[in-house]
Amino acid sequence: MENTTFQTIDGKIILRLRDRICENPEELLSSEQFQRILKQFIASLERKNSTLLSLFNEVKVQEDEISRLNETLIYLTRLPANLVEKVVDGSGRYFADKELFNSFVEQLYNYWRHFQRLIISESNGEGFENRPYRTFNRTIEHLTTLVRNTYRDIQANITGVYPRIYRQVSAGAEIAAITETKDMDLSEEVKKAAGDIAIIRQVLIYPPLIFKTTSNKRVGFFERVAINPALNLKLKSKQWLCYPAKVGELMIMVYFSLDLFELSFALCNLFELATDADLNRKPDAVMFFGVPLDQIDPDKRTKTFFYDDDETGTLIGIIPEGEEMGYFGYLKKMTLTLHNIKMMKKAVMPYHGAMFQLKVRNQGAYNFLIMGDTGAGKSETLEAMRTLGAEKIEDIDIIADDMGSLKINFQGEILGFGTETGAFVRMDDLQPGYAFGQIDRAIIMNANQVNARVVLPVTTYERITRGTKVDFVFYANNYEKVDDEHPVISRFDAKETALEVFRSGRVMSKGTTNTTGIVGTYFANVFGPQQYPELYDAISEKFFAQMFKNDIYVGQLRTQLGVSGMERTGPEIAAKAILEMITKNKGNMIV
Image (tube, rainbow, N blue to C red; front, side, top):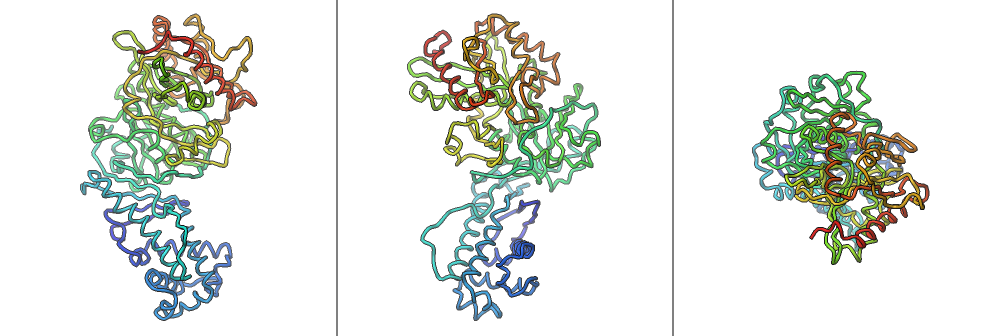
């Protein structure tokens, strides 16, 4: 594997290359990379005192024995066992118990596959990014086929039997990226810290990606600091990559440590990757995920924070390294916090909520914005509607799954925009089977834990940035049980009453953060508005006044997601109420 570097980090493998990885099984098994994997595997067997070590007739396997085994495996890619015994001196012991040898090869193959595997194809003038399919075929597709076929040939030549059932598992890398270094329009401090870090231009993933993270909930909120944190950064460029994310109309450069690459590449299912044209302009913000603790002031090493320089427009987010920060929610929410801050300074109203368009058969289309905190039932109600409204609803068009912004056009209409093309949702709160119905595109995290999550693509960048007129605005109330005094849907009769509820941001915590019980946050949005309340107060007053002036339906939707025993039926009831309301009331129909 010429022009290839190999790195292992805590159950992860990173291959950097400039061209094709290898041509044939002999080159693969002769490579330094394979020999390292083989030695690591044998060392793991020694630590466990595995019965597979009886293959060698010794507890501590010596270097010459590993070399003999390596040579035996190379010949087994093209010769049957009885001939290999004659070619490789001392290899007969491996074939004394062919079942044991076959099990050894099987476990070696599984050992390789248990790693999270990333290939980085460095372009830098080679033009790989101009022909990504060819590059990916030369790398990840070729490696996948080569590793799988090598494994199969070796097993067949050991046992003399070919399988009758073949499983095409991902045997190469799960993720591949084409990268290039580029001179970006960055502030002097950021350029000094990150100017040499390669920028991702194309990505190939093999979903479903299923992995476990070191944390499964987010703690606290993002604090504003007075001193530019980039002044302390001394990042090793080969240990980092940059995902240039298109977040709504903005571009945010997300720099991440390769220690966290599996989490960071989940951004592919959430944010569109920036184009060449995007990269020719100044980024709206930058953030760093996994910053070494020795490059952060001691009092901030357990915090997530950002720096906002009003004079220069520099906006920088920081997430430190550490097991407690190994949760995708930090990466997503910091990115969206930076987006929201930037949009507020443009007099635009960011919201924490879901926006979607319902196309109802024989009636038209209705545009809904449901605001509310994490776990309030926004996404769950939407997914329930997909199932329950199959006969009445022609289509559900996602505009925003979690965050977005509102603008007022020249005609005085309120238009809604999204930020993400994907959704980061709790598996427990989805309709039964929904996540598995989408599994061929999914990135699944902590599937066996509370707050198990899935990242799914749900819409297109063109759709979320188009601008869609708002017809209904609801606050998602997940804590009140529906009864005669608390209907599923209720309308506010005045701006002040509506603002009081929306501003309180009350929600029954669902265990996605460190909070429990009913809590309240400013506009259910700790991701920018809470840090700039005076600015957001002025913006929200203006937009809610316009809503009531336009006679937009502003109300409250009781999802009951936080009510014990109503976790699934609550969003279903809310979805039914929405369908009944628009079926009976055609007043806000779009023709």
